Amino acid sequence: MAKKVAVLGAGSWGSVLASLLDENGSDVKLWSYNPTQVKELNEQHTNKRYIKDFTFAESLVATNDLSEAIDGVDYILFVVPTQVTRSVAKQVAKILADRNQTVNLIHASKGIEEKTYLRLSQVLAEEIAPSNRHSISVLSGPSQAEDVVTHDITLVTVASDNPKAAKEIQGLFMNNYFRVYTSDDVIGVETGAALKNIIALGAGALYGLGYKDNAKAALMTRGLAEISRLGMSFGANPLTFIGLSGVGDIIVTATSTNSRNWRAGNELGKGHSLDEVIKNMGMVIEGIATTRAAYELSKKRGVDMPITSAIYHVLYDGADIKETINQLMTREGRSEIE
Ligand SMILES: NC(=O)C1=CN([C@@H]2O[C@H](COP(=O)(O)OP(=O)(O)OC[C@H]3O[C@@H](n4cnc5c(N)ncnc54)[C@H](OP(=O)(O)O)[C@@H]3O)[C@@H](O)[C@H]2O)C=CC1
Ligand SMILES: O=C(CO)COP(=O)(O)O
Image 1 (cartoon, rainbow, N blue to C red):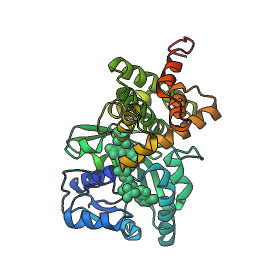
Image 2: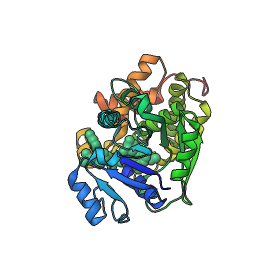
Image 3: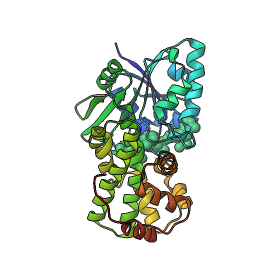
Protein backbone atom coordinates (compact mmCIF):
# COMPACT_ATOMS: atom_id res chain seq x y z
CA MET A 1 0.00 0.00 0.00
CA ALA A 2 1.20 3.54 -0.80
CA LYS A 3 2.86 5.25 2.15
CA LYS A 4 1.30 8.52 3.26
CA VAL A 5 3.77 11.40 3.50
CA ALA A 6 3.33 15.04 4.52
CA VAL A 7 5.96 17.40 3.14
CA LEU A 8 6.13 20.59 5.17
CA GLY A 9 7.51 23.58 3.26
CA ALA A 10 6.80 24.21 -0.41
CA GLY A 11 9.93 26.13 -1.41
CA SER A 12 12.35 24.82 -3.99
CA TRP A 13 13.45 21.71 -2.11
CA GLY A 14 10.13 20.85 -0.43
CA SER A 15 8.17 21.02 -3.68
CA VAL A 16 10.76 19.00 -5.62
CA LEU A 17 10.98 16.29 -2.93
CA ALA A 18 7.18 16.13 -2.77
CA SER A 19 7.09 15.74 -6.55
CA LEU A 20 9.69 12.94 -6.41
CA LEU A 21 7.74 11.06 -3.73
CA ASP A 22 4.52 11.50 -5.70
CA GLU A 23 6.30 10.18 -8.80
CA ASN A 24 7.52 7.18 -6.74
CA GLY A 25 3.93 6.31 -5.82
CA SER A 26 3.59 7.72 -2.29
CA ASP A 27 0.39 9.43 -1.23
CA VAL A 28 1.78 12.97 -0.71
CA LYS A 29 0.35 16.16 0.79
CA LEU A 30 2.52 19.25 0.37
CA TRP A 31 1.93 21.88 3.06
CA SER A 32 2.63 25.57 2.65
CA TYR A 33 1.73 28.36 5.04
CA ASN A 34 1.04 30.56 2.04
CA PRO A 35 -2.55 30.15 0.64
CA THR A 36 -1.65 31.88 -2.64
CA GLN A 37 1.12 29.38 -3.24
CA VAL A 38 -1.23 26.46 -2.44
CA LYS A 39 -3.72 27.83 -4.99
CA GLU A 40 -0.97 28.11 -7.64
CA LEU A 41 0.24 24.56 -6.94
CA ASN A 42 -3.25 23.04 -7.06
CA GLU A 43 -4.62 25.05 -9.99
CA GLN A 44 -1.64 25.87 -12.24
CA HIS A 45 0.55 22.98 -10.96
CA THR A 46 3.49 25.38 -10.85
CA ASN A 47 5.63 26.94 -8.12
CA LYS A 48 7.15 29.71 -10.22
CA ARG A 49 8.88 31.74 -7.53
CA TYR A 50 10.94 28.73 -6.41
CA ILE A 51 11.15 26.31 -9.37
CA LYS A 52 11.07 27.98 -12.76
CA ASP A 53 9.79 26.36 -15.98
CA PHE A 54 8.38 23.25 -14.36
CA THR A 55 4.86 21.83 -14.25
CA PHE A 56 4.11 19.43 -11.41
CA ALA A 57 1.96 16.32 -11.87
CA GLU A 58 -1.74 16.89 -11.14
CA SER A 59 -1.57 14.08 -8.59
CA LEU A 60 0.55 16.28 -6.29
CA VAL A 61 -1.83 17.98 -3.86
CA ALA A 62 -0.96 21.02 -1.75
CA THR A 63 -2.76 22.24 1.34
CA ASN A 64 -2.65 25.23 3.63
CA ASP A 65 -4.07 23.20 6.52
CA LEU A 66 -1.31 21.60 8.63
CA SER A 67 -3.72 19.38 10.51
CA GLU A 68 -5.12 18.00 7.24
CA ALA A 69 -1.61 17.59 5.81
CA ILE A 70 -0.40 15.31 8.59
CA ASP A 71 -3.65 13.42 9.21
CA GLY A 72 -2.98 9.66 9.17
CA VAL A 73 0.50 9.96 7.63
CA ASP A 74 3.35 7.47 8.10
CA TYR A 75 6.07 10.11 7.54
CA ILE A 76 6.41 13.84 8.09
CA LEU A 77 9.20 15.47 6.07
CA PHE A 78 10.26 18.92 7.31
CA VAL A 79 11.76 21.11 4.57
CA VAL A 80 11.29 24.60 5.95
CA PRO A 81 14.23 26.95 6.64
CA THR A 82 16.30 25.91 9.66
CA GLN A 83 15.42 28.92 11.77
CA VAL A 84 11.66 28.28 11.52
CA THR A 85 11.79 24.48 11.91
CA ARG A 86 11.15 24.71 15.66
CA SER A 87 8.02 26.83 15.23
CA VAL A 88 6.59 24.41 12.64
CA ALA A 89 7.56 21.43 14.84
CA LYS A 90 5.70 22.98 17.79
CA GLN A 91 2.51 23.16 15.70
CA VAL A 92 2.99 19.57 14.52
CA ALA A 93 3.68 18.36 18.07
CA LYS A 94 0.39 19.74 19.32
CA ILE A 95 -1.66 18.14 16.53
CA LEU A 96 0.06 14.74 16.96
CA ALA A 97 -0.37 14.82 20.75
CA ASP A 98 -4.07 15.75 20.51
CA ARG A 99 -4.66 12.83 18.14
CA ASN A 100 -2.32 10.29 19.79
CA GLN A 101 -0.72 9.90 16.36
CA THR A 102 2.78 8.41 15.99
CA VAL A 103 4.88 9.04 12.87
CA ASN A 104 8.38 8.81 11.45
CA LEU A 105 10.04 12.22 11.31
CA ILE A 106 12.45 13.19 8.54
CA HIS A 107 14.05 16.52 7.72
CA ALA A 108 15.93 17.68 4.65
CA SER A 109 17.00 21.13 5.82
CA LYS A 110 20.59 22.25 6.27
CA GLY A 111 21.52 24.50 9.15
CA ILE A 112 22.26 24.98 12.83
CA GLU A 113 19.65 26.69 14.99
CA GLU A 114 20.83 30.08 16.20
CA LYS A 115 21.26 30.65 19.95
CA THR A 116 20.70 26.96 20.88
CA TYR A 117 23.38 25.68 18.41
CA LEU A 118 21.26 22.58 17.90
CA ARG A 119 21.13 20.36 14.85
CA LEU A 120 17.65 19.91 13.41
CA SER A 121 17.17 16.32 14.59
CA GLN A 122 17.79 17.68 18.10
CA VAL A 123 15.23 20.44 17.56
CA LEU A 124 12.64 17.85 16.41
CA ALA A 125 13.48 15.62 19.39
CA GLU A 126 12.97 18.55 21.77
CA GLU A 127 9.62 19.56 20.30
CA ILE A 128 7.90 16.29 19.35
CA ALA A 129 7.17 13.89 22.20
CA PRO A 130 8.79 10.42 22.05
CA SER A 131 5.30 8.87 22.18
CA ASN A 132 4.43 10.63 18.91
CA ARG A 133 7.49 9.53 16.92
CA HIS A 134 9.00 6.20 15.88
CA SER A 135 12.20 7.68 14.47
CA ILE A 136 14.06 10.84 13.46
CA SER A 137 16.04 10.85 10.21
CA VAL A 138 17.84 13.34 8.00
CA LEU A 139 18.02 13.20 4.21
CA SER A 140 21.03 15.05 2.86
CA GLY A 141 23.64 15.20 0.14
CA PRO A 142 24.61 17.03 -3.07
CA SER A 143 21.16 17.72 -4.49
CA GLN A 144 20.36 21.07 -6.09
CA ALA A 145 16.57 21.10 -6.44
CA GLU A 146 16.88 22.55 -9.96
CA ASP A 147 18.85 19.47 -11.06
CA VAL A 148 16.69 16.89 -9.26
CA VAL A 149 13.57 18.22 -10.97
CA THR A 150 15.17 17.57 -14.37
CA HIS A 151 16.16 14.05 -13.22
CA ASP A 152 19.89 14.64 -13.09
CA ILE A 153 21.65 11.68 -11.41
CA THR A 154 21.58 12.46 -7.69
CA LEU A 155 22.99 10.53 -4.73
CA VAL A 156 22.08 11.34 -1.14
CA THR A 157 22.26 9.80 2.34
CA VAL A 158 19.58 9.12 4.91
CA ALA A 159 20.96 9.02 8.45
CA SER A 160 18.71 7.85 11.23
CA ASP A 161 18.50 6.98 14.91
CA ASN A 162 16.55 3.90 13.74
CA PRO A 163 18.10 1.53 11.15
CA LYS A 164 14.71 0.10 10.13
CA ALA A 165 13.38 3.60 9.41
CA ALA A 166 16.54 4.42 7.42
CA LYS A 167 15.92 1.39 5.17
CA GLU A 168 12.24 2.30 4.72
CA ILE A 169 13.07 5.91 3.88
CA GLN A 170 15.73 4.73 1.43
CA GLY A 171 13.00 2.73 -0.34
CA LEU A 172 10.57 5.64 -0.29
CA PHE A 173 12.92 8.04 -2.13
CA MET A 174 14.98 5.73 -4.39
CA ASN A 175 14.39 5.59 -8.13
CA ASN A 176 16.50 5.40 -11.28
CA TYR A 177 17.84 8.95 -10.98
CA PHE A 178 17.75 9.43 -7.18
CA ARG A 179 19.89 6.95 -5.25
CA VAL A 180 19.85 6.89 -1.46
CA TYR A 181 22.48 5.44 0.91
CA THR A 182 21.86 4.76 4.60
CA SER A 183 23.96 5.88 7.56
CA ASP A 184 23.77 5.83 11.34
CA ASP A 185 25.89 8.99 11.69
CA VAL A 186 23.20 11.63 12.21
CA ILE A 187 25.72 14.03 13.80
CA GLY A 188 28.15 13.82 10.88
CA VAL A 189 25.50 14.09 8.18
CA GLU A 190 23.78 17.08 9.79
CA THR A 191 27.02 18.89 10.60
CA GLY A 192 28.39 18.44 7.07
CA ALA A 193 25.10 19.55 5.53
CA ALA A 194 24.78 22.65 7.68
CA LEU A 195 28.34 23.91 7.50
CA LYS A 196 28.98 23.38 3.79
CA ASN A 197 26.74 26.41 3.20
CA ILE A 198 29.38 28.61 4.89
CA ILE A 199 31.98 27.32 2.44
CA ALA A 200 29.61 27.88 -0.49
CA LEU A 201 29.23 31.53 0.57
CA GLY A 202 33.02 31.83 0.64
CA ALA A 203 33.42 30.13 -2.75
CA GLY A 204 30.89 32.52 -4.31
CA ALA A 205 32.70 35.48 -2.78
CA LEU A 206 36.07 34.33 -4.15
CA TYR A 207 34.48 34.00 -7.60
CA GLY A 208 32.91 37.45 -7.34
CA LEU A 209 36.31 38.87 -6.45
CA GLY A 210 37.93 37.23 -9.50
CA TYR A 211 39.82 34.38 -7.82
CA LYS A 212 40.14 31.19 -9.83
CA ASP A 213 40.17 27.39 -9.51
CA ASN A 214 43.14 27.01 -7.15
CA ALA A 215 41.48 29.35 -4.68
CA LYS A 216 38.21 27.42 -4.94
CA ALA A 217 39.93 24.07 -4.31
CA ALA A 218 41.87 25.55 -1.38
CA LEU A 219 38.71 26.89 0.26
CA MET A 220 36.74 23.70 -0.27
CA THR A 221 39.50 21.47 1.11
CA ARG A 222 40.42 23.55 4.14
CA GLY A 223 36.74 24.29 4.71
CA LEU A 224 36.04 20.56 4.89
CA ALA A 225 38.95 20.18 7.33
CA GLU A 226 37.40 22.62 9.81
CA ILE A 227 33.88 21.22 9.35
CA SER A 228 35.29 17.76 10.16
CA ARG A 229 37.06 19.12 13.25
CA LEU A 230 33.83 20.57 14.63
CA GLY A 231 31.80 17.47 13.73
CA MET A 232 34.34 15.11 15.28
CA SER A 233 34.29 17.17 18.49
CA PHE A 234 30.64 16.07 18.77
CA GLY A 235 31.44 12.42 17.99
CA ALA A 236 30.81 12.35 14.22
CA ASN A 237 32.45 9.58 12.20
CA PRO A 238 35.32 11.24 10.27
CA LEU A 239 34.52 9.08 7.20
CA THR A 240 31.14 10.80 6.88
CA PHE A 241 32.96 13.98 5.84
CA ILE A 242 34.43 12.29 2.77
CA GLY A 243 30.95 11.06 1.84
CA LEU A 244 27.95 12.58 0.12
CA SER A 245 26.89 14.92 2.91
CA GLY A 246 30.49 16.14 3.38
CA VAL A 247 32.76 16.55 0.40
CA GLY A 248 29.90 15.71 -2.01
CA ASP A 249 27.73 18.58 -0.84
CA ILE A 250 30.67 20.98 -0.68
CA ILE A 251 31.48 20.19 -4.31
CA VAL A 252 27.96 20.89 -5.52
CA THR A 253 27.14 23.90 -3.36
CA ALA A 254 30.50 25.61 -3.75
CA THR A 255 30.47 25.24 -7.54
CA SER A 256 26.84 25.32 -8.69
CA THR A 257 25.54 28.64 -9.95
CA ASN A 258 22.08 27.43 -8.81
CA SER A 259 23.22 27.42 -5.18
CA ARG A 260 21.63 30.22 -3.21
CA ASN A 261 24.61 30.32 -0.88
CA TRP A 262 27.12 30.47 -3.75
CA ARG A 263 25.08 33.18 -5.49
CA ALA A 264 24.85 35.22 -2.29
CA GLY A 265 28.62 34.97 -1.81
CA ASN A 266 29.21 35.96 -5.42
CA GLU A 267 27.12 39.11 -4.94
CA LEU A 268 28.99 39.96 -1.74
CA GLY A 269 32.29 39.47 -3.57
CA LYS A 270 31.14 41.88 -6.24
CA GLY A 271 30.60 44.50 -3.55
CA HIS A 272 26.86 44.31 -2.84
CA SER A 273 25.69 44.71 0.75
CA LEU A 274 24.36 41.75 2.75
CA ASP A 275 20.92 43.41 3.09
CA GLU A 276 20.72 43.89 -0.66
CA VAL A 277 21.74 40.29 -1.32
CA ILE A 278 19.12 38.88 1.08
CA LYS A 279 16.40 41.12 -0.35
CA ASN A 280 17.13 40.12 -3.96
CA MET A 281 17.41 36.37 -3.33
CA GLY A 282 13.77 35.78 -2.24
CA MET A 283 14.74 32.32 -0.98
CA VAL A 284 16.53 31.18 2.14
CA ILE A 285 20.33 31.61 2.29
CA GLU A 286 21.00 29.17 5.12
CA GLY A 287 24.73 29.90 5.35
CA ILE A 288 24.17 33.38 6.76
CA ALA A 289 22.58 32.35 10.08
CA THR A 290 24.61 29.14 10.23
CA THR A 291 27.88 31.09 9.92
CA ARG A 292 27.03 32.93 13.14
CA ALA A 293 25.88 29.76 14.91
CA ALA A 294 28.99 27.82 13.81
CA TYR A 295 31.34 30.70 14.70
CA GLU A 296 29.90 30.97 18.22
CA LEU A 297 29.88 27.20 18.60
CA SER A 298 33.54 26.95 17.56
CA LYS A 299 34.46 29.52 20.23
CA LYS A 300 32.46 27.69 22.90
CA ARG A 301 34.07 24.35 22.01
CA GLY A 302 37.59 25.65 21.36
CA VAL A 303 37.63 24.29 17.79
CA ASP A 304 39.82 26.23 15.36
CA MET A 305 37.67 27.35 12.37
CA PRO A 306 39.60 30.13 10.62
CA ILE A 307 37.48 30.20 7.43
CA THR A 308 34.17 30.26 9.31
CA SER A 309 35.59 32.96 11.53
CA ALA A 310 36.72 35.05 8.55
CA ILE A 311 33.31 34.75 6.86
CA TYR A 312 31.60 35.62 10.15
CA HIS A 313 33.61 38.87 10.41
CA VAL A 314 32.74 39.80 6.82
CA LEU A 315 29.01 39.10 7.32
CA TYR A 316 28.52 40.47 10.81
CA ASP A 317 31.34 42.93 11.57
CA GLY A 318 31.63 44.67 8.22
CA ALA A 319 35.19 43.37 7.71
CA ASP A 320 36.66 44.06 4.28
CA ILE A 321 36.72 40.82 2.24
CA LYS A 322 40.10 41.39 0.57
CA GLU A 323 41.78 42.34 3.84
CA THR A 324 40.18 39.29 5.51
CA ILE A 325 41.55 36.99 2.80
CA ASN A 326 44.98 38.57 3.25
CA GLN A 327 44.84 37.90 6.99
CA LEU A 328 43.89 34.26 6.39
CA MET A 329 46.71 33.77 3.90
CA THR A 330 49.39 35.36 6.07
CA ARG A 331 48.64 33.40 9.26
CA GLU A 332 51.56 31.48 10.70
CA GLY A 333 52.40 28.34 8.70
CA ARG A 334 51.18 25.06 10.16
CA SER A 335 50.94 21.33 9.52
CA GLU A 336 48.14 20.24 7.19
CA ILE A 337 46.92 17.43 9.47
CA GLU A 338 46.67 18.40 13.14
N1 LIG B 1 16.93 24.31 -2.68
C1 LIG B 1 17.74 23.24 -2.71
O1 LIG B 1 18.27 22.88 -3.76
C2 LIG B 1 18.00 22.50 -1.46
C3 LIG B 1 17.67 23.01 -0.21
N2 LIG B 1 17.93 22.30 0.93
C4 LIG B 1 17.55 22.81 2.23
O2 LIG B 1 16.13 22.78 2.33
C5 LIG B 1 15.68 23.81 3.23
C6 LIG B 1 14.62 24.64 2.51
O3 LIG B 1 15.30 25.25 1.43
P1 LIG B 1 14.59 25.74 0.10
O4 LIG B 1 13.43 24.91 -0.23
O5 LIG B 1 15.68 25.92 -0.88
O6 LIG B 1 14.12 27.18 0.61
P2 LIG B 1 13.08 28.18 -0.08
O7 LIG B 1 13.42 29.53 0.39
O8 LIG B 1 13.02 27.88 -1.53
O9 LIG B 1 11.72 27.70 0.57
C7 LIG B 1 11.44 27.75 1.92
C8 LIG B 1 9.94 27.61 2.10
O10 LIG B 1 9.62 27.67 3.48
C9 LIG B 1 8.61 28.66 3.65
N3 LIG B 1 8.65 29.25 4.99
C10 LIG B 1 9.37 30.31 5.43
N4 LIG B 1 9.08 30.57 6.72
C11 LIG B 1 8.12 29.68 7.08
C12 LIG B 1 7.41 29.44 8.29
N5 LIG B 1 7.60 30.17 9.38
N6 LIG B 1 6.51 28.45 8.30
C13 LIG B 1 6.30 27.70 7.21
N7 LIG B 1 6.93 27.86 6.05
C14 LIG B 1 7.85 28.84 5.99
C15 LIG B 1 8.91 29.66 2.57
O11 LIG B 1 7.81 30.51 2.36
P3 LIG B 1 8.07 32.08 1.98
O12 LIG B 1 9.19 32.12 1.01
O13 LIG B 1 6.75 32.51 1.42
O14 LIG B 1 8.42 32.75 3.27
C16 LIG B 1 9.19 28.73 1.41
O15 LIG B 1 8.01 28.22 0.85
C17 LIG B 1 16.94 24.62 3.58
O16 LIG B 1 17.41 24.23 4.82
C18 LIG B 1 17.95 24.25 2.49
O17 LIG B 1 19.29 24.32 2.95
C19 LIG B 1 18.54 21.08 0.87
C20 LIG B 1 18.90 20.52 -0.32
C21 LIG B 1 18.65 21.19 -1.59
O1 LIG C 1 22.08 22.10 -0.27
C1 LIG C 1 21.97 22.31 -1.46
C2 LIG C 1 22.42 21.35 -2.48
O2 LIG C 1 22.88 20.16 -1.94
C3 LIG C 1 21.37 23.59 -1.92
O3 LIG C 1 22.16 24.64 -1.53
P1 LIG C 1 21.65 26.15 -1.63
O4 LIG C 1 20.67 26.34 -0.52
O5 LIG C 1 22.87 26.97 -1.52
O6 LIG C 1 20.98 26.29 -2.98
